[in-house]
Amino acid sequence: MKNSSISRRRFLQASGAAAIWIPTSARGYTSQEMRDFYANGEMSVNVSKWELDTPALCVDLDLLEGNLDKMASTMSTNGIASRPHAKTHKCPTIAHMQMDRGSVGICTAKVSEAEAMFLSGIDQILNTTGNVTPTKINRAMNLAQQCPGFIQATDSQPNARLLSEAAVAKGIIADVVVDVDPGIRRTGTPFGQSALQLAQLVDQLPGLRFRGMLCYDAAAQHVVGFQTRKAQTLERMVQATDTFNLMNASGLNTEIFSGGGTGTYNIDHDTVGMTDVQVGSYVFMDAQYMSIGGEQDAEVYSDFATSLTVMTTVLNDQYEGRATSDAGAKACTINQPWPIIKGESGMTYRSGSDEFGTILYGDDPSRNYKVGEKLEVIVSHCDPVVNLYDQMYAIRGDVVEAVWPISARGMSA
Ligand SMILES: Cc1ncc(COP(=O)(O)O)c(C=O)c1O
Image (tube, rainbow, N blue to C red; front, side, top):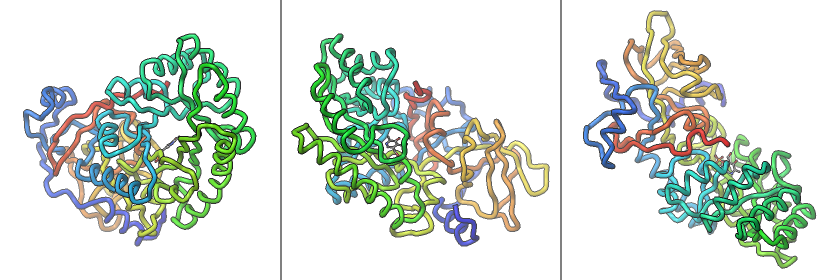
């Protein structure tokens, strides 16, 4: 994040308008009460987000829907599909909203996440992380047996053989994509012959059906500055295109070439052959993404709105220059840049303590908090924060419209 006061001001503007109503005697409705109010699929009691027990995870529906619509229209203008990554939201309701807007499927990072999405009725799932243990391979093939739209990634020949054996044992032919490393050495097999040979093996193994490849350049997503990000992404993906063309030329079924994310969503259609973009964070956005800058707005990546916030309550106001809130590392993580207090200026937030957040006032804070008052913070990095909550509150205006289970929360295996 840039440090100049101009940047700070732009950040605060982009983080939304100041709250207009903050009750001092907020009721503090618990998670259980909120679930009860929403038991029939609509709220039986009017509850403001300011009345929630805290810390509470909220998503602003107007902003979320705007983000979903913008992604859908950009994809359609650019002639590329979206296969959004559910690792960000872990929430079937949002996955369905993405599918309803024309996504070709969703991605998952873990087989347990994929199971949760399938249980909620999502039946086009690409699991982007390889499974290497017998337990996980078996689990993935169980899912493939139940869900014909399930696709598993693999990045090595021994792994492909194990997947095939498990599939044969279940009497199925499982769909597989080859994960190709964009040069970051995290997962995937190298570009070129290594990827081609793996694809050919997958194509020949009795239990597998080759569907194409994925190549996700994690290192490109947060490159600061749109033109730098674009140049780096397109340069690196040339080798992915060459690899995809090799597979195509050897007669393989190359129907999928998946990759990209929120940082490159409006760049990836220039990668020749790429079929779909695995965008995740765009639904919520966060302080990390805000700091990379966009094509139109060099200072703040404002292509998508920051729809996700954590509501927190002030616990202590006795000390000069600061106040303590109830949302620390266990509510916001310790990722950086630190969370941003929505709609306020002249103050910063730290979430380094387990149970406590620290509000630090600058020279000219827009307000001072009293014990019991609430504030709303934009989180540092949305994915790990969502994973800390069982449910999120869908808010319209200031009012809770729905309580959404984060069904794949904690599904890290
Ligand atoms: C394989 C894969 N694809 C897509 C994404 C989505 O990225 P983003 O949240 O930047 O859109 C991720 C995120 O880590 C990922 O690991």
